[in-house]
Amino acid sequence: MKTMTCRQLGGPCEVEHHGASADDVIQAQDRHLKEAEKAGDATHQEARDAMKGRWRRPKKSLDWYRAMQKAFADLPEN
Ligand SMILES: [Zn+2]
Image 1 (tube, helix red, strand yellow):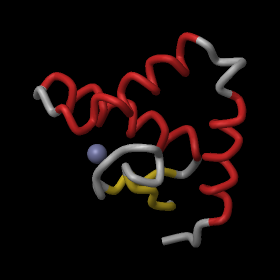
Image 2 (tube, rainbow, N blue to C red):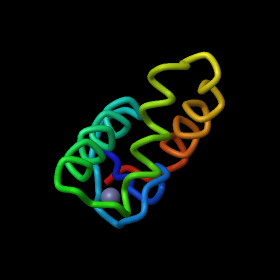
Image 3 (cartoon, rainbow, N blue to C red):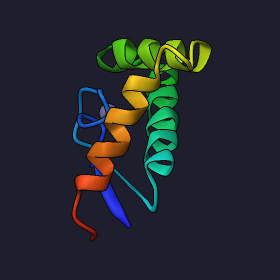
Image 4 (cartoon, protein in one colour):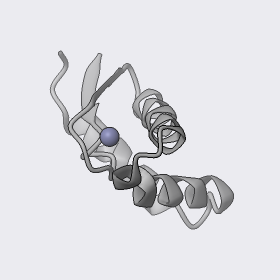
């Protein structure tokens, strides 16, 4: 398992997501952003909108996914 924070995934806070793959932590971040939006947390809105845009335009977002996968690969196991 590895850990990436909300901030490492483009968000504003230090919540930690744990996963075995980059996809796991990206999905955890997506859930975290949805919950923040539902709770009316304005600090997460920009990251939430960016994530929504990525689901809509996956090809344009490949660079972001690759960067996240590389960041995840470079992390130590914990
Ligand atoms: Zn957050």
